[in-house]
Length: 246
Image (spheres, rainbow, N blue to C red):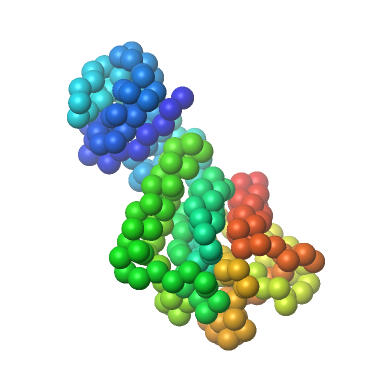
């Protein structure tokens, strides 16, 4: 079953209108026909709108709503991944897999050890591409929202952003006591806003970790092995997903 995202106003009564780039994809790539079924989500209410195609033209796919499904696909907490800017195209992989694991939003963070430096023009271009990757991953994994890839923040801005979050975690290679990590994960509850800070290649600067701790961010260990930046986030998100979906 193919899934697409629409704006809330595109669902009206029993009529659902699909517009934009998805029109070409449905007609010319998927080669769907009138009468075939697809699903849409509006990215707001967490529902799946199952509908059948009744008309097609160059600008719009018109569908008839058949039924609405509320299946609790989304995690019961808003999980934000604050990812230190990695090298090459690793950010694309991180976004794709984080969306599959249920992240609510992804925040690229510029830290002291980041090799990648983005000026305003490059940042806007990258952000548009990253948002497209988030949407594609949301479609593939049957999410009901498209997680936002926010604009690049400095580490200080990121700490200020999460000042009211209930749970704030920063995996740190010098942290110890895996039992403490397990205790923190076991205590996660639905409804909490959860922030996960992941450093770039080379990790966080000691001063950044100190600033994070002063801001109420809890340092945790991920085990005895050193994980790559793209692996560390997936590890924590997997633990969070497992705990919240029990």
